[in-house]
Image 1 (cartoon, one colour):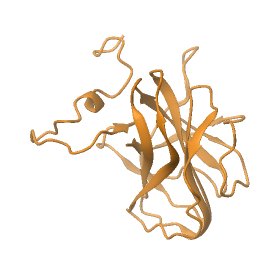
Image 2 (cartoon, rainbow, N blue to C red):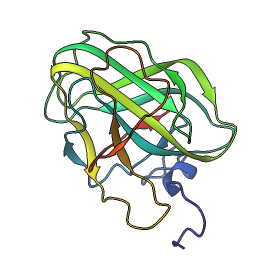
Image 3 (cartoon, rainbow, N blue to C red):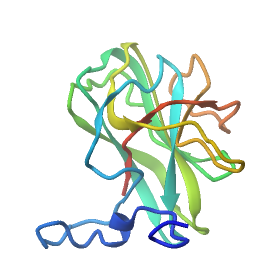
Image 4 (tube, one colour):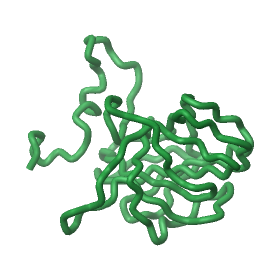
Length: 186
């Protein structure tokens, strides 16, 4: 039990209408990490998908997934997509392939899902990103530990290989990943 009781999300998400200065935040969003204590993390090799746990609430409608590059820009990208997976790891929707679009260092990139997804059951979903490039960008994120207790899940995981512009139908054979990138769902 945490100080938040049985609540498993980020308390800031439910208080997103306020920030530390008491000013209103203009948009709905969900995030997997707070925006403090983050650093530059390497998330996946070229053509490998990295998916992170993201708690979503019943009634949320997710239209975009946003990631922020770290100190390393994408070098000669050929494919870039984001996708949203349900708690079982089945594909719900993916973005268009951004192909060779530049992704500079320390730059926010938003991927619009092909179809907005209305969440029908609260739980842990998977926000995924795959970049095929000669140099895969690092992302703003943190470092997480492997699951310790029975029933715990990964905070971040990799799957697939040689992916191009199409998200796999399922997250097959996920492998624990220590690097946990920040994702913001709107």
